[in-house]
Amino acid sequence: VRAARKAFEFSASPSSASSALLSTLRRSRLKQREPPLVSARSAKAPEVFEGQYGTWRVEESDKLEVFLYRLGLTGCAASFTLAASCLLLGFSDDLLLNMLFLSLVLSLGLSLVMIHIYIKPAKRFLQGLFLAGVAGLILVSS
Image (cartoon, rainbow, N blue to C red; front, side):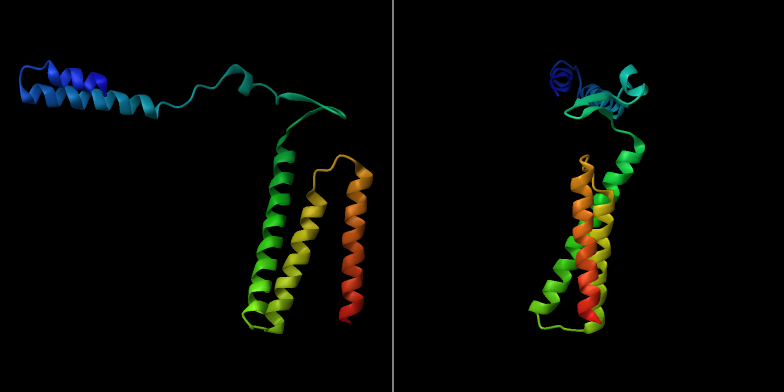
């Protein structure tokens, strides 16, 4: 912007000032469009991190697992919100509520399969609680 002002102030005629301003703006827009440089580090293997339980790195399969975990949590929250809203508003269609509840259970199950807990007993405990809840649901509903 300063260069554009200078070009405008020091130009001899209005047409040269506008052309100088346009060329300065074009150059600044071209600079903004340049793609970021790829560093040598980002082109190499994934970065290795030091954790409490050893070294680890983020791989593509980890990214997919985290995406599916978050998708499951989002589906769980959306199902719960829609079901609660239906009940609070007095809309109690059994088929719709059952489908929302099934969606909630499946979404929670997906998240518990994809959860990143590196202490295997804790992960298995959470999954066991989920299966016990599903078994209890089946017993109560039949």
